[in-house]
Length: 278
Ligand code: ZN
Image (cartoon, rainbow, N blue to C red; front, side):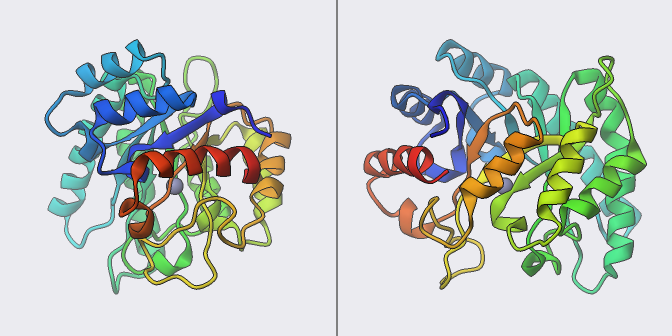
């Protein structure tokens, strides 16, 4: 059973709760961390949010999310870079260990071109992240999103971008790494090997869990709690552990079904699913 102290919950998972409510409830449930989505910062500042979270004794593995680098013109690509710079500033003020990058894609743009723009975009902001002591974590998304959300679909593609940029913090650790989300990569026959490589190279920055329901009613907002679907989550977590991953196991669930339910009972289910099915 994974320790609850290593569990972090993404605010999007219980998105009807304000940040203050989420902090209170997560802390009372005994989890160790909270990953903050940018919309949860509306009405406050990253600095104040960071204080609120620290005072509750919670850690912040990540701010979600930056990315969306590809665009059809230079102005669009620059706007994306500017937005990522703001996101890195917010992550530093919040006290987050990393910014998660959903890398982006443009319908009709060749994926190879999109990946080049992604690499250029990350490279453009990586030095700022290094100076702010914030990691950047490329999150490969399931190929069902390759048209419009991420031209990076696999751990291997993400690793190649990390290798190309190869920027190191003062302690020698890579600034740019990977957020491995079981929902997106569970089907990949290279997953075990790529997790091992990412671990050995210091690229394993984040690990996200939820489940892949066999019959999904929506491609975005019908994810399952751990145990509700077909992913071998304990098996993948074992690979992550073997790779030396020291971070949080982050629960990230987009689910209209769960969002529409009683959120206190849902949080209890999250904790149960984390302890029994992760
Ligand atoms: Zn994720």
